[in-house]
Amino acid sequence: MTSGKNASAFGKSLKALGLSLASFLAVAAAPALAQDAPAAGSYTPMKPTEGVGMPVPEGLGLQDQYSKIGEYGAWIHNDVLLPIITIITLLVLILLIVVMVRFNRRANPVASKTSHNTLIEVIWTLVPVLILIGIAVPSIDLIAKQYKPAPKGALTIKVTGNQWFWTYGYPDNGDFEVVSNMLNVPGQPTINNGVREVGSEPWDGPSHLEVDNRMVVPAGEPIRLQITAADVIHSFAVPSLWFKLDAVPGRINEKVLMIEKPGVYYGQCSELCGAKHGYMPIAVEALPRDKYDAWVLTHPGAVIDGQKPAAAEAAAPAADASEAPAADAIAEAE
Ligand SMILES: [Cu+2]
Image 1 (cartoon, rainbow, N blue to C red):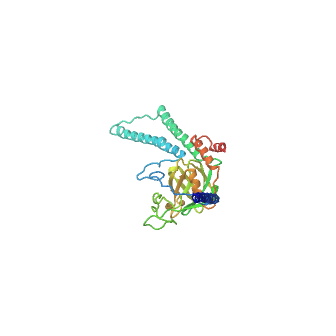
Image 2 (spheres, protein in one colour):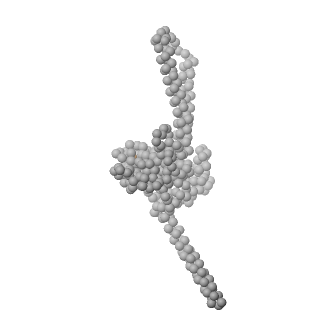
Image 3 (cartoon, rainbow, N blue to C red):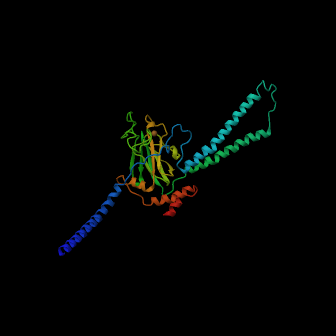
């Protein structure tokens, strides 16, 4: 009995010792883990969705748009310009056919001597003027919206075009830099410094568009892209994000990039920049803020700007309202 009691007491104290040892280890390990965390964020590249942010076989027209400005631009193209140009083209074609059939020398031997008609002259002056005004109003509005500066708290990313790859700098996240090369195409010579063949990882997108290191950005918040070039003129262009801006050596061009939902969006250099101009694709991976921060932390020396997530939440509805300045929304959130 006694020995049993002693044994259970011994067991209890051993258990207590074990518990305290475990809690001691946990406490000791916690700061170490917390310290390790910034250097060891986690990131697995996102698998692109077929047909999203990339060209499709036999595709006609604009790619589907994944930014507010892109949706607006696509609307102007598809619902304003295309119908107008179709109607005008058909009208001119019909008029030509009517003239050829009804007013040729055989069908109409005695030509009319009419040389002026005030009503018709007013109509064919006024109608084109009205059409041009109808095109100008949304077009100028679109240009103005495209070049609206980024709100004050927006994340800045530096894009540099090089012969023939892109580098992406993250000054707000500790100023690390990502070098982005096209992946090798199986059976073809290595074009750039691509480290592996396209298709060798499950998240690889189309060949000639996929890169070794993507430009990772947060989705749903305005990003200030500052674009320049190191050697010759390049152009940073992603069709599904309605984004194209020249990269000019010695000069910084700036434009807001705002991607509505997470995904991978592909583009290419769009300025003839030398022999391998066709082999410097752009892959933009938009991630939710928390996943973006985790990606940032995979880089040595990376820092997270704690205010940025709040800015993101505040900026998203402001961007929806399109007229509401996002900077004010960010200031309010702060
Ligand atoms: Cu280029």
